[in-house]
Image (cartoon, rainbow, N blue to C red; front, side, top):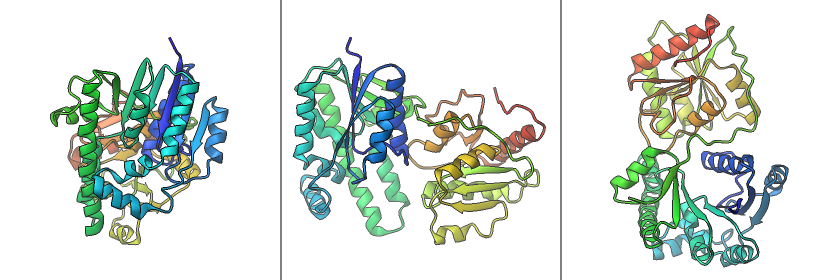
Length: 384
């Protein structure tokens, strides 16, 4: 058995400042912890300085190879034009134009043999033309959500007509790519193992007639957290925490949904702190509410401090698509987490620190009140 694994990613992965990166980093570090020899070939899609990523992966025992694209930086208009002509995702189009990237991948695979290769995004589908020329024990293709549905939801939530159209068009292109990948995996007779973030995501795809009977597995709650959080709950001025941008429609709608009853409730007078990027327009919406404090963007250290001191993380999401990344992060950090049933879809909730409410404000607030009371009484916060 060849105990080596190659990850191919569309970004540097580290620093892990968004959900996709955190999940990919979790998969990489899981392979390291399982004593695999790990190599990462990263397409530097966002033109980042690779120093931090290189240092981190070297410390972690991961061979790090960064590819800096030559064509994409100054030719984004051309990418959009080519994308329209081919009706291919603009993200995949930018990668496909970098022929040197695929030559690097081919040369590397000629020199080194791997047991497993993991393609960490469907926009890297061009890599399969190279991978199919080599023998591996296993090839993984990773889906971080129901990709086309996620873009469709971004289109629905956008206010700008031009942005709405751009997301809608991209969702159609990604849907076409998903169908092409379904055809490819059937033609390759199970050569690829599909990795879905949740069982729910897989079932959504099969309802569309895609990836039925394909070899697959679920990447359960695999999010990398760099350190433990020492919980030191602030009992003097307790607060709940919602770590999500109010500029994202589904976050904003969820908080407004909760506040409809939470503002009037007399059993729980504790503020909800909200972190994440927020425009002046959206911040203004919440100024009339007494029980919410919009902190805006905070540093990683400040967020860790809030995680340490909060009563619990709340996730009152009632609509939208894709995994709720902050839920996985709270579970990984072992912070009490209160979710709606909708928000809990696809999340492993067997943890003692997770509280799932019905999709109504009264039950959600009841869970908040109960968790608060347990903290104030010094009782271990556990619902199992």
